[in-house]
Length: 414
Image (tube, rainbow, N blue to C red; front, side, top):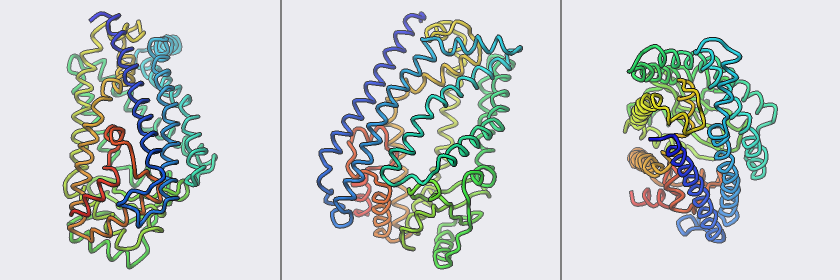
């Protein structure tokens, strides 16, 4: 393939993906607006019209803002590639540092820092304008900056050694370097799964043992029935940052923890809490987490194999505005452009995730009262202002969970 042909393909995919995202967003906005003035029949007795309209308006506000982000991301990608951004950063790194390893690390770190700084205003507006307007944001700007600083420090402590190791292996391990890098990547991710609950998550939130004895006893009985062991039941101070509620498992092996947002516990009764947890246990019983980990590792292996092929070709670099081939430039270019070529696979990944959600729901209704799970989900939709009427096609691309009406109908049938 020639460099000019690959440039044309890149521009075509960028235009196609950007226009498709904008078209899907417009469909989503129109569909929500057309259903804004009437609560769906399945929820008419549980959700008020005002709550339904709040969910519609909140989702619409986020969707309209995402359209700006889509355009910005496209412009940023062009800036890094055809406009010469990566090329310039690479030249500066070669001027500032000696040795290909240091130069490669500098190129990637600078590119990531520039990207993060340029995207920061979007994150700030989303948090302090949209989330605040609908009553969800509890975060102060000081806390936001502290979180960002902690994230940078953790990224430096964990990410820089990983990056150095990856670039060193790419340069020294010959034709099959991608197998060595993949092995390091797998070990690194497994390490993060082990250390995240005890060492990383507490840097951002406070985790307290669940104190309500009645709830604790009910949950422990459920865990025993399901054959699940954990290192503890914890309540997270999610209300410090947001009014949104959730519950999740974290960790791996003996470090598994069950975590409830304090906002979740405030709005659900014991039976509903048990039902939500039973759904999460369904993911455990069906080995969904392990399946997703394995699939992620498989995709990363394919990604590295493809990188191994592309970095040998001149047209890959030149077609994306980079004249100097290097391992760091190849890694950056593929990382930045891969979403363009994988966007159309979004519905496949969403369908795979939804299948897991249906299986977890089916497991939950065998362990608890299905009505409790339905009531809990309705409360979560209402408390989180999630729209009950997403555009079906938009939902297929973006939603990892089934739409509310489909999910509730599935549970009622069960």
